[in-house]
Length: 107
View 1 (cartoon, rainbow, N blue to C red):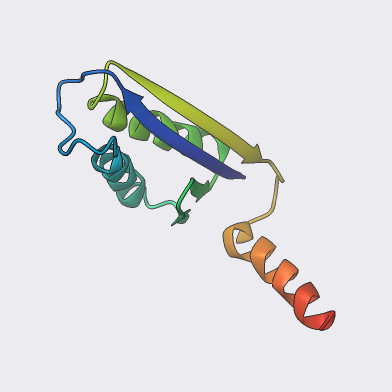
View 2 (cartoon, one colour):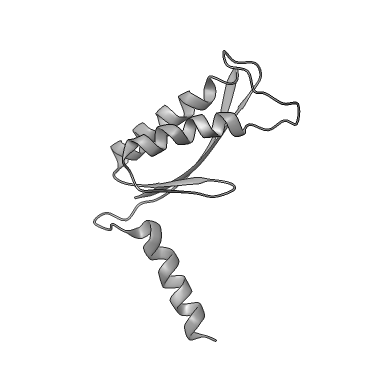
């Protein structure tokens, strides 16, 4: 499965966010550190982090990443979207490659 998620803390947490521009990049970096050590394939973009793995592994990483970001606020917002295709692997890059092939063929 692929799981795309985004976390953002709000309020005051045990760890302070530096700067006064409203950025939560420190909290996102803490969440991504959890993702990086998980061993699951992932991709970061400007809005979401997408993981690939099985249900239990992906959701455990999302939970731990949410908790890491949550240390920066008294609450945390989580947006999650999943593409569940049992038996498929390599879809983190495979889905994009198939679309790019179709685009190239239509030119």
